[in-house]
Length: 304
Length: 304
Image (tube, rainbow over all chains, first blue to last red; front, side):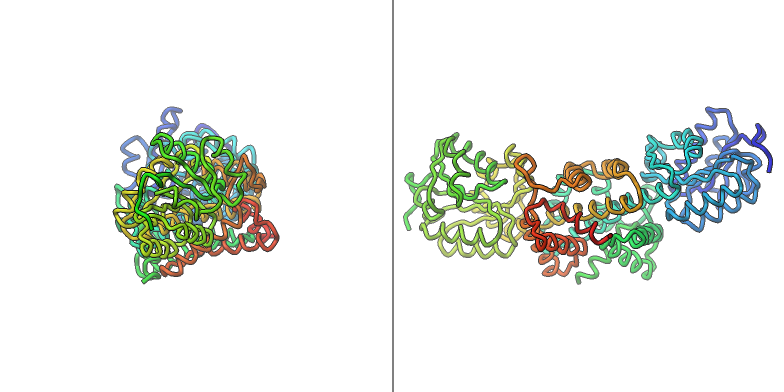
C-alpha cells in the first residue's frame, strides 16, 4: 500500500445512473476548479462518454481508481452493487487514508460493514445518501446526509458540498445516515401509497379528482405530492428520460429496507408493508420498470 | 307550516365548539352587514355569551329557530348530535324552502338521510363540511365543501362564503361533500400516524429528531406536518385554549368513519386501521381528551 502522493490526487466516480449523471457532473466541475484529474468507471461505458467529453478519463474497473485517486465517490442501485464495487476498489490497493464516499440508498448495517472493511484496509468508507431526485442531482440541490467518524466526515465535506445544497450531519454512528435516509423514504413511499388509496376512494365515491388535488394542495403543498398525484390520476407510470421516476425494482429495494428497519426497530409500519405487497405484485406482472406510483394499480385491483 | 316572510328572515346558528366559535362569529358579522337578526342555540349557554355581547339573541333550543330564521347553520361533534339538532329544528316547523346548512364531519350516508328527511318537510338540508382548524375558522380561512341539489347549493353559497376563503363544489350527490371531507381527514390522520412511526424509528436508531424535521420540511413543508411533529417530539398532547387540537374522542369518530368508508368502497386502508387501534387504546386508558397526535404513545408502547 503506497502513501498518498500527488500521483494519486485524482477524484474518481462510479455509477452513472439517473442520479449518478448529475452527481458525477458536479463532482467533475469541482475537481476541475481544484485542478485535479477526474476518473470515471461505469459498467456501461457509453453512459460515461458525456463526462469524457468534459475532460474525465474513463477507466476499466473500480480497481483501477486507487492508483489515480485519493477520493472515490459512488451512487449505485443496491447493497450488492455497493459491496461489489467497494470490493473491487479495495483490490486496487488504495493508499492509507484514502476516502470512499457512497451515496446509494443501502441498509444501515451494510454501511457499517463496509466502514469496518475499510478500516481493515486503512481506508475511510463513509455512507452519505442523498435526498432529491435526478433533477436535484443535476442542479446541485441534493440534501446530503453524513454520518460516521469525525475524521471521515471532515474529509468528505468538500465533496459533499460539491454535489448538494447542504449537508445534514447525524453523528458518529456509520449506520445513522442510512437509517435517516430510510426514514425519509418511508415518508415518501407511504405518501404515495396514501395518495393511491385516497384517489381510489374518490373514484369509488364519484368525487372529481380535481377536488382531491385541491384538498391535497391545501394540506401538503409539495412537489412530491403533486407529481405522484399527477402520475396516479393520469396513469402516467412509465419512467422516461424526461420523467425518470423510481422504478418498481428500486422501490422494492427501498421499501424492503424500510420494512426491515421497522422490524429490527420494533416499529410496525402497516403502510410500508401494504406498499411492498403492491410493488411485489407489479414485479410478478413484469411491471418492474414502471414508476413506483404504479402501486395505484394494485390498490385499484383490490377494489374491483 | 308558514311561508317564508320577513318575520323569519333571521339567521340561526347551533354549536359553539372550537370550530363553531369562529364560524358563528363570521356568520354573525355577515348577517349584521345584511341587516338581519342573528340567533344562537347552544347546550352550554355560557359559551354563546360572546355572541350575545356582539348582538346575537340566545334561544333555548334549535326548535325555537324556525320561527325566527330562514337559514340555520350548525357545526357539531358527531352524527348523533347533527341528527338530534336537525330533528329539534324540524319540530320548530320551518317555513317551506328554509335552508339548513351543516358543517360537521359526519358520515356521507348520514348527510343523505338528513337531506331526504329535509325534503319530506320541504326544507333544504345541505352538508358542507370544512377544512381548516379553529384558527382558520376564526380567520375566515376555511375551505368549505358543498354538495347536493343545485338549488340548495346556490341558496347556501353566500353563507358559505361568509365563513370561509373558498367553496369547493363536488356535485349534486348529497353524500359527496362528506366523502371528500373523510378523504381529506384520511390524509391528515394517516400523516400523523406516519410521523408517529417515523419519529419512533428515529428514536430507536439514535437519530436526532431535528434531522427528521429537516427531512420532513424538505419533503412536506406544511403546517400540519410541523404542528404534529412538534406535538409528538415534545409530548405536548394536551388540548388547551391556545392549542385546541383534535381530541382523541373526535379522532375516533373521524377515523372510524374513514375506515368504514374504505370498507364500503372496497379500499383497505392499513394506516387508518392502525391509527384507529391506537386511538381506541388511548380511550381505554382514559386519555380521550388528548390531541389525536397522542397515537405516538401507542406507537412507542408497541416498540417497548
